[in-house]
Length: 355
Length: 176
Image (cartoon, rainbow over all chains, first blue to last red; front, side):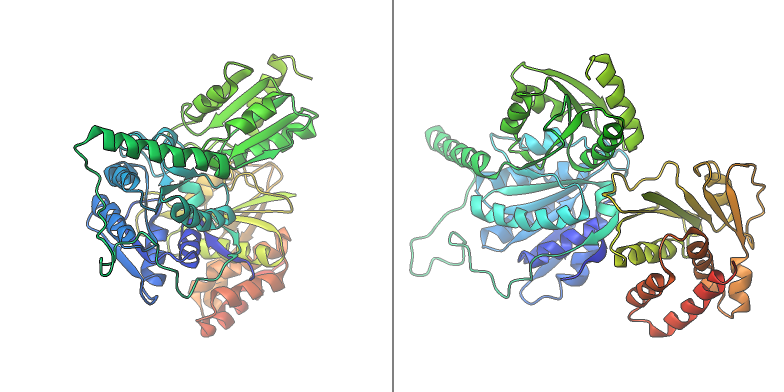
């Protein structure tokens, strides 16, 4: 398979089709419209597949709910304000232990915000987002290639753990084009999920519901959800480190910000500053063990986010009071350039007396 | 080596296509490349621009705050982006439409009468390809044959257009 030049949103669409996605339900919002457009053109043509432009975000997420109940690989996508609208549905999907893939090409906020790239939905994505005691797996790609790879992984994870998976991107990742290679061909036919509701002929009926009037029963459901979350944390936590071996200062950043940070680190490394990068790829589960491991040799951390400081809380929790954590953030859709971040890093490096 | 280029002009002038052709050509040469279109809440006939970053290494940010090369296809773009170019950079001006005084003395200005040349070729819409040809010659960012190859890929379903665009590209390329 050769590389093709593709925008991030379209590459999610192509990767989803190749991951066996059968249903896409969407409602337009910038900066993710290319994904809806791609699915309208390509998914709707595939045999046994469905594309629906829903009448609202609420309708779209509940269509995903319906498709998932009957065993289809289903997805929806939106951007920040639209993702807020989908939260009720996501909570219901989590309660019913249903797989689904939800893409958030996030934009500046709060409110309607701006259409520019921002990372201010970290809290919403990693803390469940809707009401109730639940989590979703959150994947944070930082290139178009990774958008494609993680989309395929998202569908596999969703099915494996019967859980909604969020892909948390941003306006720049969605809109920019990069060479991308798709590492899988679309499957001819996926096996039907064992717990799919397709008629109870020859077996006792099964019920999918999110309401129970018995607190003890609901407690058991909550316990079982969190046993699974524990397993996910053990098996699926993913991160990348870059030049951390001899580092005196480590930058922690995710998504597009991690990429900018990497450029900044190359700049300061050229000047002899020992700086590395830790990039969480799964935001939930957060790679706290990886942070702890790095902290064995590093005291100073700089968390860099395109928001006012959200992931910094997870870094601090992971460090359990050890180390020193600084923060640099640009909210609202402003995209800092690598030389700006390099200036922040070198200032901090010298302020802390590092050599 | 990381080189960023910004293409700007009216919506409809084909500035996005210029960027896309360059990005595709760079990809065909095995380079790292990003292409970032910028259209906010724009209107028909308003301005549009895109940024192409080409590098041998990983590209940190697809955004260019001070690009090495700027191609301005119309007057508003020339006014807006002349201050963004890195010192020592190249500023390509579509002299058919740009009358702005360029006050910067630390950049090289390349004037190409893209619209006039395209009209003389009998295909006014291919002014963007005339400019791209001149850009490829002066910047040396990618090989001309890679751009031709990228055109064939982009226009694979519109074979008639390939010939017209090739002619325009060569006309621009052979200006210098």
